[in-house]
Length: 301
Image 1 (cartoon, helix red, strand yellow):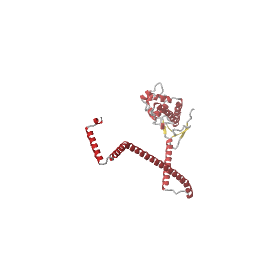
Image 2: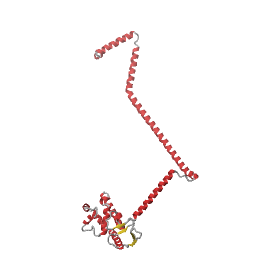
Image 3: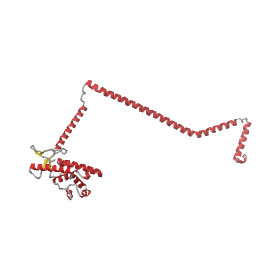
Image 4: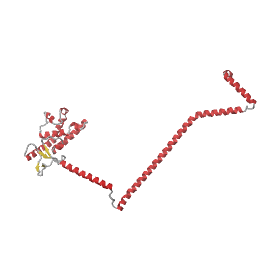
């Protein structure tokens, strides 16, 4: 059965093997053949095992090498961190020791000699003090503002008298609340010039901008038809018609009338305004000349 399954080539090969075995047997080398075949078979088995296991061995060796290397690096890093902490701690201790020794040395050696850098720093400090004094003088001069012209429409809060200025502060608070509600910048509601001019117009004319018609509001700078349609101008005038605002405007009118009576003119009235943030006192000084007329202004509560 086995012979039927073999091919011609295999039969010829078997015949050659048998003939070679017979020749080796005639030479007395029959015992060598099995040992050689067994050794070759063992070597083949080893080579097959190596071919199968060598990739696994190499991967394991690489993994162990990388793991060992990372562990060594981590140990080195931890050692460096510990050394750095120890060095920092030593440096802090040395600094504290120097700080403690420095006052003692100064007491023993007396006052230190003035160096060039300390002199330069002291000069800079003196210059800064001089600048601050000059700024204070300028602010004081600004606080003593010039005469207020009631006939000229104000350009800003510095052109208002004390009572008008206090009313401007209240309207500015209203403007800020309105702007926050609309998520806008305050100047987009009204600029400072608009509020100041509206206060002066209402102070000069108690009926300006009142109902039933508010068309006179458009005479003010910065108030156009759009502001009228939005209703912001009407709301501002409503804030100006509260009892507190009316009282401030009345006091401002009394001040203007008192100054006009003292100067003897009804037009072109000017009065000196102290700092805007100060409350209006009962005595006011008019003019910037050497002779100042003091006017007693009695305000009705």
